Image 1 (tube, rainbow, N blue to C red):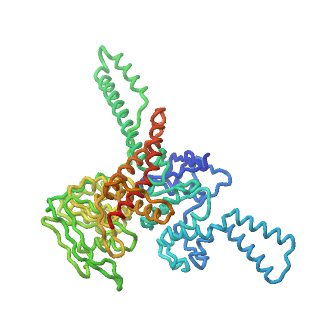
Image 2: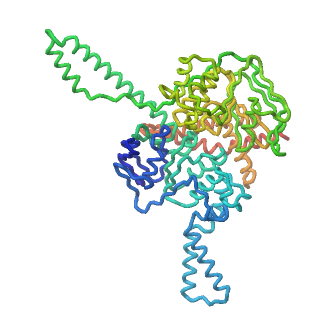
Length: 616
């Protein structure tokens, strides 16, 4: 059933047409991700759907009685005294019923004799409370606040005392608790750390309603998305599945269209050559016939690709094999230990992702390594022929009117032609290179700083949240460039899609310590899930799995990894409509999937048993 239908929507701002032919359909149970470059009009289309903007053409229809929940990014909840009250206020009907029930009870406590009508009303109110889920509501509020990173001490604070990020978390909690039919989320993962994002993902996956989501978080869209609608150049196109499937289907579509376009262009060129050659003379009649044939050809459009800048990082000098040694580094702020006796090493060619919750010291660690901040103790030793380059979250460049071109040429010894070629890779073309720094957007500033880093030819690139302020095409282009970089990478990011695609090793910053994990982000996440399952199995009154005789915990873990990879592959197979065209493929894949998912908990228990035995 269609909940929201937008057809051929048009929208002008002055003479500028932002939406030319925008359409989308959100069906019951779908989680639709609206994607496109910055400035494409995604938020404008959402505002049109919500009725906050008038359209200049087309139509928007909502199912009668549809309840929309909207993420209020800038709400400060000034009318409520505490965070707890703000979260509880998400269900005003429930709160009103509670207040009425309390008023009746207080009246009877004052020795007023209830009438039969009062008793009937009291029973009606309590039945209504039961129907509204009153018994579980406070538990739901606690789970939402804690899951989104608002710890219990903040619940008694006034909302106006919260930081911007905390207010965003409160706004999300308020929205999720409201019990609407459709959640409308514009960049919901902004200001959330990974733990809070993962909690939100799990919530949305279980959410019985539908969701319309605008996001730059590719991993988030992979986890929750069931449909993607792309908005570019004022027009839309929809694709089934999550973000990765959208990218794959889009690439296949563009490739097919490119082949058809190229073939048609070749045909047109041949016809035109014949027409020009034989316009006069013996074959003039044939030439006219070909000209008519040429006029009848229905032209195929050149394939449209949403692509980011064509970035290419290079390492001018090859470093030694031992790139970096960090020994005993400690750092405190106002008496609080952020880093304590941190030590690790980095070898040439490693791609090291630095992860951890907000405020744990990830940026502090990277700044110390980059010599942008002094440690209280410890040492940083760089290896032979290392040329580090550092990208900060905030661009450290003078904003005194210098142009984009000046900024790059001041930072690296380039000719004007070389500087313009470099800037073009980051989307600064033509007169864009003469734009003054103060007028640049956050994304443009990031791209300029990345251009400076590239121009310096560093062979060790250190990046602090490089995808902040970048749209999806620019994020994809940056990730592609970094994956091809021949040097060494250290990067802090909340972008799990980037972690998954690039990192070969992780440094986990937590409680002042740094732990190394040799593997990808998805492997690390699966390990956390196994530990969580192991803890749950210890609490549950079930028999432990019996470990096979002989195998060590590492061997069982390797088998678990293979099983998890196969389950992930089978999930994709079963999600592909083409699977069901073969009468044997779907049942076979389903049987294997069911077998593996039933066996996996047993393997977790076996791993736990073997681990316990190894420790004894």
